[in-house]
Image 1 (tube, protein in one colour):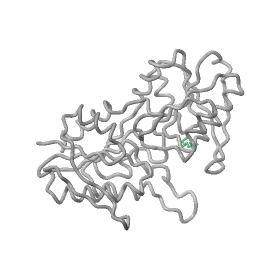
Image 2: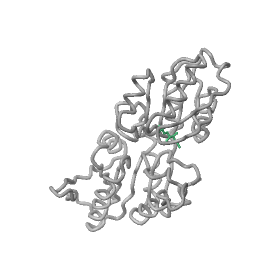
Image 3: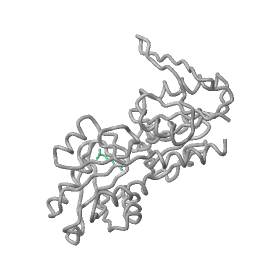
Length: 296
Ligand code: R5P
């Protein structure tokens, strides 16, 4: 059966790696906006009977989601065998409970929408906190891979004597696994968030690690406040400026520049294309795609 990869605008680098590694045909299509903002889609590839994969990183999801659904609907209409979604960054995972009376649980609703549309879903390190597994909210076959080994490999190649530090309790799952895979020590700090840009971090036990390079590891960097507060505490405790690794750099406007201006080296995976990308997820994603396509 023919395998065709459609790459949504903005992820051409990762898309090209997957096409080369996976023996996919490149899905040819045109997508543009009419003057009124509506989306025009035309598929040029012959897709009848093909196993189709769409690569779409869902950072800034609102503007991408409807064009994604229109492409998917067009493909189904043209007679594809199946359509899988590769979303290296999976959006809407953090609003995973009703924090205040009347709030929507967006993680659940978004999961329902995706589950209704695609045959399978592949992602990397989704923000699983109060939701413990994608299967709790996604009803389609959904595979969540982890960038832990890729980050550990980056550490081995780039940092001589690292101490991995999770900037808050939620990051412990990544920090502990990365440290284990890279065979280095780790610590987890505790964080309290008082607002979108107001975060306080406490720092235990850093004295034991003078002479090590601190490496902060988290799943997401958004405003960068969590990383910056943790970094400030580490510096105050006598450590050198940490390297900040986020699996997903979703960076609020100005956040990456602010972190760099503060002297921090920021490293992310290419789940979201950006100048901080140093960790390539293509080999990992390829494994997941092969696994999911076998069940198609
Ligand atoms: C929190 O739940 C996540 O794991 C990250 O710690 C958080 O998203 C980072 O946000 P910010 O960069 O805005 O501090």
